Structures are given as structure tokens and as C-alpha cells.
Length: 73
Image 1: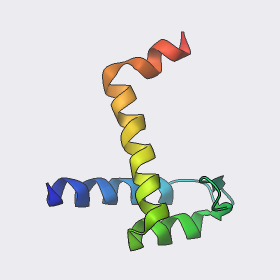
Image 2: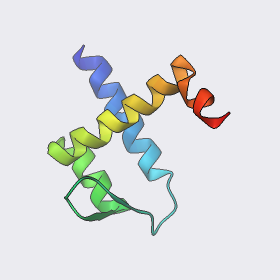
Image 3: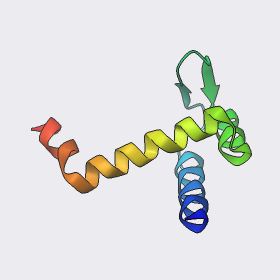
Image 4: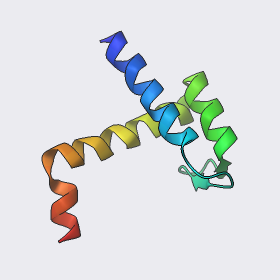
């Protein structure tokens, strides 16, 4: 299971790297995070980084289940 988590962490990191420079997001009450800050949190595996990974997992699960497509219709 650790390998899957490590692979997924690398996937999330790569997806953030692919975001345009200047991208900012807000996670809960943590304030606005820059692309660089997002990468740092994912790399550190801290609470914010874990939350970002959970969000990405939920996104991919919605793609897999087709529920994301149901929402778009």
C-alpha cells in the first residue's frame, strides 16, 4: 500500500507542476497557496499536502465512477 500512496503522491506532484505559473488555490482555512507552496506541502506530506492528495483521489474516483460526467450533463 505504501507504494500506491507514494506513486499517487508523485502523480499529484506532477499534476501541480503542470499547472500554469501564478496558479493559486485555497484549501480550507489555510489561506491561498501558490503553486510553489502546493508543491512544498505535497512533498512534505503534511496536513495540507495530505488534503490535496485526498482531493485528487476523490477527483480520480469520480472520473472512474462516471459521476463527474453525470454532473456535467
